[in-house]
Length: 87
Image 1 (cartoon, rainbow, N blue to C red):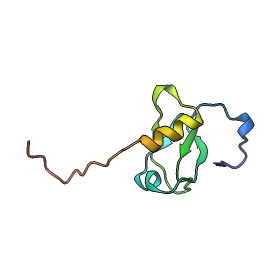
Image 2: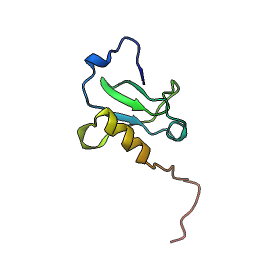
Image 3: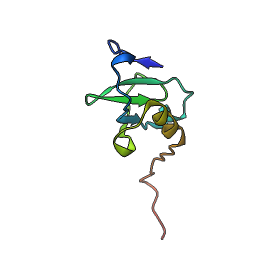
């Protein structure tokens, strides 16, 4: 797991308030990273430095282990807005 520069796991509370839902980050091999977003801890499974798509975690925050499991189960699909529905 990577932490943002200057952060320490000892000062990290056990609550992850955001996760990265960027499709490329969810599909990549796990390379866990925790960073800050809006003054709260945020988790990206890919550990990427490129732009993220932050979404709030459910239930007012999750432990790091629960956030990892949630992201693994998460199946966020992009909606193709160019496709017309026929119903």
